[in-house]
Length: 529
Image (cartoon, rainbow, N blue to C red; front, side, top):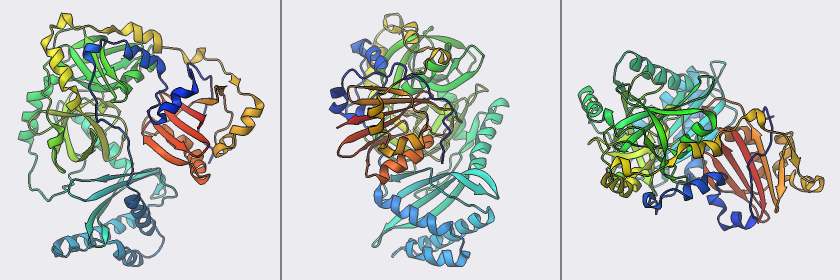
């Protein structure tokens, strides 16, 4: 399938000082070397300690393979009874809980009936994510972006919950969500905010442990009132009045935390960045106090010693099915509270059953005691599964900043970052500094010329650098534009060695291929081992 790459333009500021830099640890590649330079010049007293943090997203091979088998049976054209009979081989049978076995059979029947009722047809996987819980259960989320629902093109999510018995993992509870469900949820939340209603509720009330604990309106109202002054919305505005929204929270008075990736979006797409709280007060962002690109956090100073500092909790104490709460604004229409469920954590990465949109990036996740245990990141948006980074790593920095007066907290002024990042796309010039013989060698890697036409880029120090401008919905991952190219790499024997939402790294004996989303660009690096 020909990819939807509209413009292919200059490889601007894509630079490789020497190939050895990439060979040190290709999995840690950050193409924003200007950002690295600026971050390295920030006050070392405000360094964020991130030992043990790792944002890799690795799928469980067994669960992924099992998910594919089940989905293949479920969407087959056979009669529902035939499909149900085939799925018996994968159904969860409990030796000590007949109720669980009965439930599993009933859930699968309802799952197949919904597929038939909605006339769901799928042709290819968009993505599969697997998650292990601390209850020794497993979950997978299978995404389709080219599905048909009652004859219309829709995104479809199939959730599969697996329990383990003596035969391994077996299907306990499957469910389906369609993009209409997701859009309706965000629309409902926004409408509630417009009307001044602070309770948004939850998108999915799935319980992992059968707990009867109910999140009441009273609980939500109390959590909201106690913590609403600790959170902010962050807005980037361009010259045409278009806005990019995100969220953040007060690490201490006058100091706001959000994600580094969101901050870079503001710098690239906006001319003006400001913060507003739930009371309608607006503050300019003065500059950057601290940042860590790998941890995906930036700490900003605003022009006012205002706000209430959050209390950082212990994310390590979270258990599967613990409720997490978020207070923020979807589109600057008012603040509200919503909640979801914690699934599991590994190396400082929280996996949650919590539907997130773009404006939720950077938002604090509160536990039921009102302590902040995580910060939402954009590694999985518009799906039931989402990721957050543990805020445990911010505790030392918070202690340092609280001990200082507002006026004595140093920062790098925002204009310094603006000068490095603001640029006009119209000023870019197309060029292709790739020798014909070099291109003849590299173009066969993943059949790149066929799958991604009209390549522009450069070749230096045995590194081929390619950059593309892509257009698409914010909810569509840039990686989907190169899915055919990725399929070819895998077919040619390349192994996926690293993956997150913004980057994939493939290797064989001779080459490393790095595919990275960088702002509104798609970047591909091909390096010799």
